[in-house]
Amino acid sequence: MSNQANRLKNLMSESKNKNTKNTHFIAITSGKGGVGKSTISANLGNVLANNGYKVGLFDADIGLANLDVILNVRIGKNLLHVLRDECSLGDILIEVKPNLWLIPGESGDEILKYNDKNIYERFLNQASVLDELDFLIIDTGAGIGGNILNFLEMSDEVVVVTVPDPAAITDAYATIKTTSKTKENLLMIFNVVKNETEALKVFENIKKVADANIKNPLNLEFLGFLSASKEVSLSIKKRTLFSDENTASSDELKALTSRLLYRLEQKVLDNTQSRSFSSFFRKIIERF
Image (cartoon, rainbow, N blue to C red; front, side, top):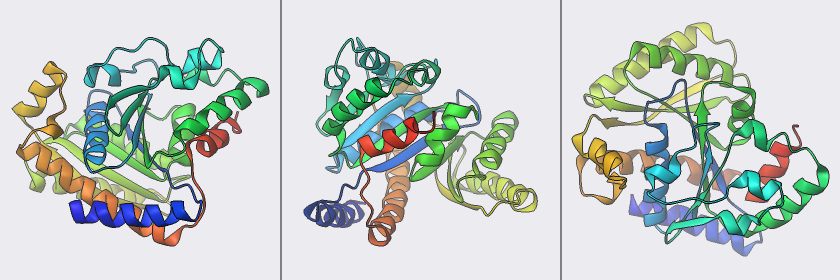
């Protein structure tokens, strides 16, 4: 994985030398809650940060923001307070560890009710502080609400997380079907599975149904899996990151991170457009 990370970092450095911003936006979503989406978001960000990338974790889980709990940090104010002009964006950023920052969110409905042009311009001017991020991982809410779909559509990569439970699989498929209207490429992570064999079997079943019923062009890809693990469960209770430990679960996460880095490496080669935190949110805001 380290070789993959180094190759991408070199490509991104070359882009920065050409004054091109290259923040990659990764949305982690799910059809239903309770499938480990936020735990995966936090640990994915941690693995990338450990490999020298500058990573922002944006808690966009409407009404259920909980990355602060998983990361064992205490938040005071959040993005809503910034939009109310009660503090600056820099005031709410939490440095979890070197290279890893938490951007506390709030109810997306509340955030996006603020449609005053002056408020947003002030926010976007402050947002430039995050333009040097290599990655922004967006921990969205579960389901397919309007605001969630906007984040999914604007992201470079959309990762759908599910567990091998019939209800979760059904909801994951619904998310895939709806998102396919605007995103041609979608990735999947299977959590709390027995092994890779079970994960691939569930994925192939979902892909078969999707290929037969979704008329929009869709390239659904298997990104990876996390086996059911006492270590992961214990880390959640202890509010630690399992990706910092030398375990099978950590290796599984690093493997899927390596696949993700390979995809992004190809995008850096193919895409010369400038992408930054402030430009991303400007596009989001323009939709309202």
